Length: 128
Image 1 (cartoon, rainbow, N blue to C red):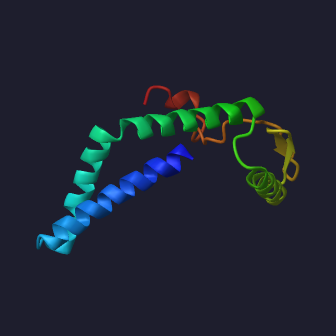
Image 2: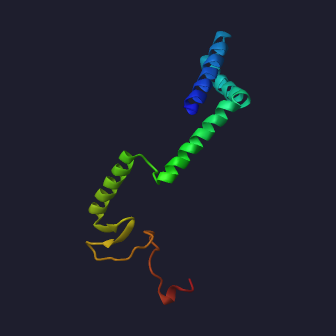
């Protein structure tokens, strides 16, 4: 909730600055740019308390998620797992957990980095 409150304060400061600049006769595009700069300055100078409260709230939320071992929502985790299974099925890879065992179609069992090292060098090419 502190994040929502801080965001609301910043939007209100931006809107007030924009309306004042527009009322003073500034071009609308210039009024938007100046209002953004003014809103940043005002929020930095005068909204320290709400900003710190929002930062503490976000840090606490991140810590609780880390303790649960949850990076994403359950729906996002399920979607990612399904997407991974589809990709693995299409490529023919055998996957156990997060480890790729090998390509079941070609019989390749190496689990290299996936980076092509280029053509192999022959002994005669060593000096070039």
